[in-house]
Length: 233
Length: 233
DNA sequence: CTTTCGACATGACAATTGTCAAGTTGACTC
DNA sequence: GAGTCAACTTGACAATTGTCATGTCGAAAG
Image (cartoon, rainbow over all chains, first blue to last red):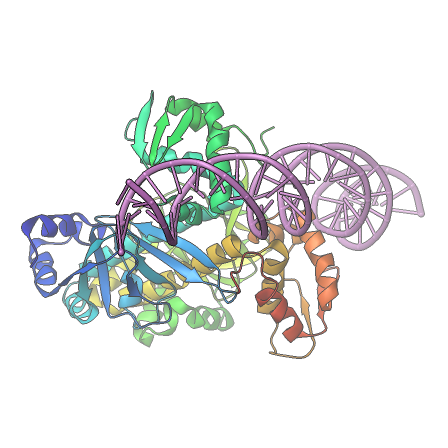
């Protein structure tokens, strides 16, 4: 089932990229390849982890359902991202649920394979730690955003992360639903709409899922200057 | 310098608790013991990690300084907590700064010791992963709180975590500054004050650094019922 | 082609939170 | 003991955000 192109994507993931070829081949040959429809569940909160997951195509969201039934989006993963590493290695329940937000293709590496390989070569542990650290880092960045930035600033930063270039103008496509973007940025869809219209004053125009940024530097300085609670004396 | 009592605390940390005695002794014998004054810096964002840190006494805060100069508290650690594991093993810069918020006593395990031991026994890797996962989990919980709860609810949950018992009344001491509590919960000190007074209606009274909770269950249902954006149809 | 439905935008309103400006209090210094 | 200072509290106000209601639009189904 797996094509070479898919394997190539998996090989570029942080989890696998720095491992010796021999180990990568072992892992790839034991992996399970699967397709998911939009909206399909990958795993549920509290379930016990049996594998590490690598996204080959599409978008996956990790989220938590609060006791009151509200949903909090924790992360959104794309092609080449892996998730569930730390959980898979320790037989503990997932702290989050995972769902395909578009048609997806995933690769699952069964945790027993990973564990046995790790006993042979501690280098595997380092790779897993590297991926886990990446997630840790992105959560820290998200916390900083939520605690120290206004909604519009978070949206601006989200757009900046989509840009390839560093300056001048730039056109990008919104990678997924505005509803999901809102969730990812910790706001309601209505607030996202308002944030978008507020960004018009710094040269951002949104049309459908297409964003037109007339000046990247202007947008960047909006994120950094417009102090919401910045003690910028 | 290290007393047996301090070693005992270190041994209870998630990092060390499940390791074979022999390894623990090796790590403890190579560790550096140090005292810190209130306000002293442990390390700074962007610095390269040279050790894993274990709190033996006092309180440590991890925080990020945003480009605008605002501070976002990421976590607060107490006796028996370890931090910096994932960073120490990979020679990467810290994503956060660390500061003693009270007089503190720390143990530092130099990363080379950890790395060489890990090459002998992959079990060390599992332990480090266990600690890292704990941090990951607590960040996820924090994100959920910020995205799905009001300020007063976060304060209520913070208080609940301080309680020993499960029901009835309960008196607790606030472990640190209200300023730091506010930061940890992602709000301004003024908002914390107001949240406290709002909680009076559910039987919580604050006096100095002392909190009196007249009914734990009532407080818990305040967190879970009072839906801020809970789709509780 | 028409119907239907969900994603999205917008306006009006309420609730929450940040900001600024006092004022209080306790700890610490001299 | 007087004075100083930082940690709070509180009130008034502004800004931001959630909530609810309504309307538009486009995609998919019939």
